[in-house]
Image (cartoon, rainbow, N blue to C red):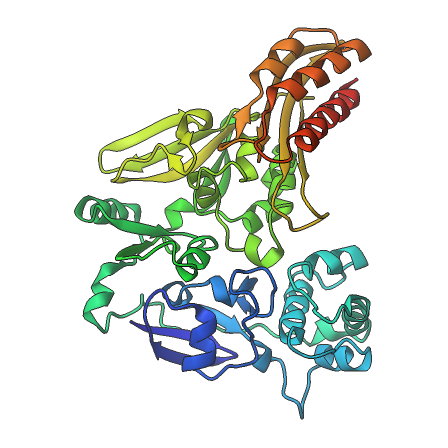
Length: 450
């Protein structure tokens, strides 16, 4: 498949398989070797690049999704003989150790400064949280970013131009006929009707590592990344509608989400590093139907619904009904998830998301809890709660809800509810820790209400 990209201000072409990782295309086919492969799963940040203005892991981007994009790699900032201000700051502050991770660190810092030219130290730490320094030189790296800001680095930025023609990738072999690249929903449904065994690509943050590890062999693929009808976050009437191809990064940047769904914002913010957040989609997170997924744990208490669509029409169902079992979403062979529908919370209601893992940040959930409550004059009029990472799929805590609903909130009721929650969850691993943590977080939430 022939793809074209604007890389560091120049138009580049490559003839590569559709699912070849962009990192390999950059290094092997186009000679941009500054980006490194560390983990191949989006966890180390050594392959960081900026694609269409967003930080991404090049190891998780299939070639077909990079065609038509504007890309900045470390080579686009400067050379050893002519470094730019950020690279000079890394050298002067001693932020360059063995050098393996440095290109990714510099690019991640550049992506932050393009979006936020006056970051706090905490914002710098968050922006670089997906980049591992194996030489443990983080403080000097943070100092380098701060120095570049103080030296006026952000004033030197210029708007980058995308030179691509805008055409979709061009098939160059017989195998390329099994790669479908629709731009409209109508095309999506036509492809699904004619190809029952097609695999769907969205953010690709899960599927590329699974292919690498031998879990999947894809015969036919359909890339949804160009279908604009599956994107967008909108307030329509008394609900928030989130397109299935909206990313966690889109959620984090959305003023609508911050204003109306702060717990969803929190869940997206705590799910992965910035480069992964800019790729991972809501539809992929829910359709994976995994017990460890973060978003369902808060969307269940928020009474979210899933809207699916195919050539046979539109279906709408509660998220609780959509997730049938582990890795079993309620999707027919000719359907896709179109959007998620979340009713507006009532005024003065409270929503919270909690997550605990083996470390503070960027960790898979060992336990996650989501809550929604309406309290008036000390009485809990409505309460919904869900737990994740303790069962094959996220579950509603119906026993906990039952003991709290329409009850006056007291210290005695809080203790009773904590015991009910302890008994209701039944984790397979680390059972005592998870049950105790669930009980403690229920207490924390209810004491906040009190």
